[in-house]
Amino acid sequence: MPDVVYKGKTQPRIWTKPLRKLTAETSRGFEVIDFAREVLKIELYPWQQWLLIHALEILEDGAYRFRQVIVLVARQNGKSLLASVLAAWWLYVDSRRFAARVPPVTFKIIGTAQNLDIAREVWSSVRAWSNYEPESIEEEKLVIP
Image 1: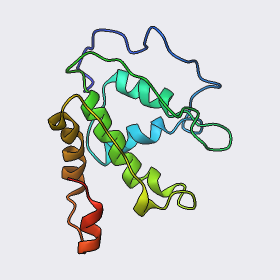
Image 2: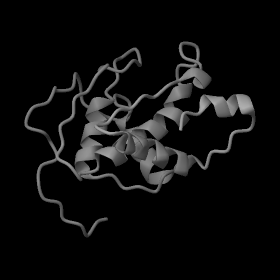
Image 3: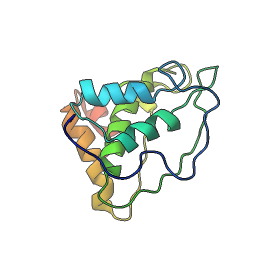
Image 4: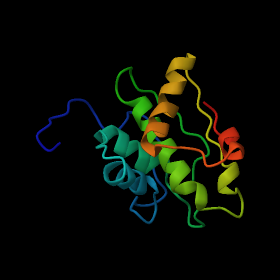
């Protein structure tokens, strides 16, 4: 999307400064952006990229700096898409990173929204990208529609 001119600001008015320069070694956000572009074929908006890079900052021991991130963005700006991309990345990439602590088969992502249709929209995108077909009845029971 090089021909697109965006209006508005990428950086929010209020935000927590990083502990050090954010690079591919200090933030997993770069991985998510690459995952969206290369695997899902989605080009994220500049504000989404900025958010991922800052929200997924990692400490020197490899743990995430933030346990919770609060994001306020007006409607129709790509919040659900960003949640879908992040959920897919967590499931397919990050869930295996700490397998000793949280086995991938028990890794859970929980999302909420003001109504059930919007909450399911995020999960529907992830399911469509994965083209998931359970291999057994036991595996099918792990999937929440």
